[in-house]
Length: 534
Image (tube, one colour):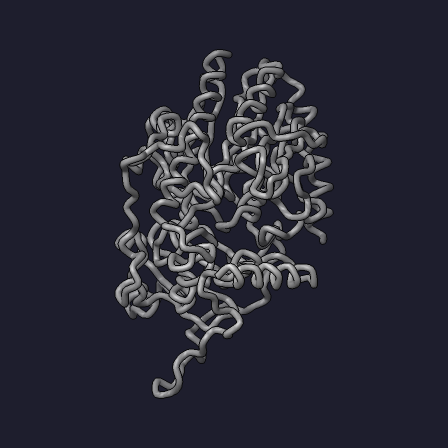
């Protein structure tokens, strides 16, 4: 609680100071457009995947910087977005899942820009807790929607999709990626461009279920997605893996029962590719607007994903886990201060976005940030030796999706140590340089005992919040624990019979809907109707 009051008082003093400091000419400070995509994994770029046609994203890399080792500290929508906006780990901002509310007194970094003279706008997906789509502090302009939103104006229930425009609900008119871009350009057109602006452009795309714009419905026809080798259900693929990974294979987030369906993972990924294309078109429209207004040289465009996405790796789909494809994201930036055609290999995270943008805007970094600015890595002569290539990863178990346990990991530029809290399962240690697909668990390698011990200690330190407390109370792990079983005894217990399904039941997508008498009556009726038809 003391952190909340301290943050509010600090912000008020900070605001008074910045109003005086920036009463000077603002015209020379750069404009900033931060584009956040949903579920765009690190290699979902034409520069890394030759199948893809993403010319505008590729142009940002060609004319700017590609941060090749960019990550999120939680691979889940709401926690990742809260980390971007606060510059804090989930253990501090406490938006630990997609339902947790924003803590009272939380300050989002655009408020600091606003107080420094920037005109600010939020356009797109907010998706944080009970706040729904209501306007939030720090933004002069607000356009959002409830939850995940919908790609098309008439949603799957046949009802009209709505947008929240500055607190007033209006009908969605078109394909969401295009319509959000229309709103963005309308806002930009109304600005006095002699003053700096900050646009936080948060796309719905490419969140599942993937629905491309109609113009891209047949894109990539005749081409085929290559699925990962480690998708196969083989002893080799699961050697050294935790039990929960193989158990998840036949569940909501596994390739054998994806979203409790029979969808084809390859076709599914192709729809993902197609859905991304409208985002690339959107970037092209923003670039064209900047060119028309002669603002290209004084505007920074930054593109990032809110988390990665699994398409079969280790038999998994979706995200949440601490494997590379889940937590690694694209990060591109171009504009003043970003060297053209440069690749940065140092490890950066979504935790670092807020301090980086404030440094770009020449705004003093507040005490609340746990991240650091990576702007120096983009300069012509960065002090690379001073960069610490580590961060901690957190995922907190969700009762809606219980297949993935609470996960803590620490990643450096060489190693990753993963621990699972509250389950009877093994640690994982990977040499990312020599084993980028994370197939060889080195947790029991005696030659790496010192590495494991050091990473365990660092993981425990980094998972504490700014008060030195752990969100999940636990003590530092120092050994394997009393984990042994009698090899001659029974096999692992089966899952409860009431959880088992064959794929034809009517309740397959209802597990996360809150229980009620009405829900069970509805399901009972639907199952009776299905049984009669069969």
